[in-house]
Image 1: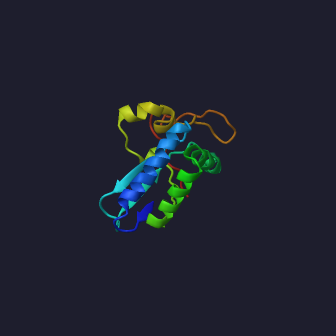
Image 2: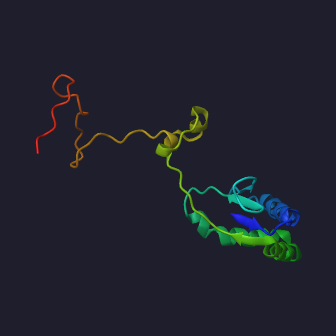
Image 3: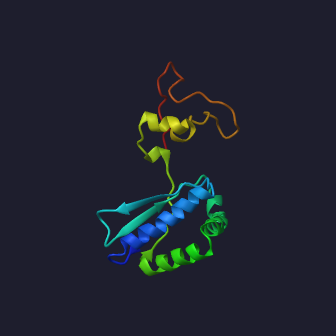
Length: 149
């Protein structure tokens, strides 16, 4: 999340265009999406979202940054860094995880990765790894009473 000083949006947009253009130029396989917050944040605020398959993506960020700066050229990279420092009032980084059990997505969306969004239940096994009957299958489909304490 990046908060800007008032009235610095145009300069920020130019710097972001330079970065995203070079991001595509280096054929980065790491997606990056930038959203402008229009309500609920003080002053001009932008969110940078970059999904990760694993935390290894964070480890690879410095190399990606070097490649982008090299792609920009020394002068453009220096201008972008100077502009970024001048227009940025505050920035924060957050790391989020998605839990499919806590998410409600459409069937069409889930179809993009069924293994993640609709995982198969684990086999019904005891601690010795032996399959056991699902609860309620004994005694003619009735659930046996719980043991008394």
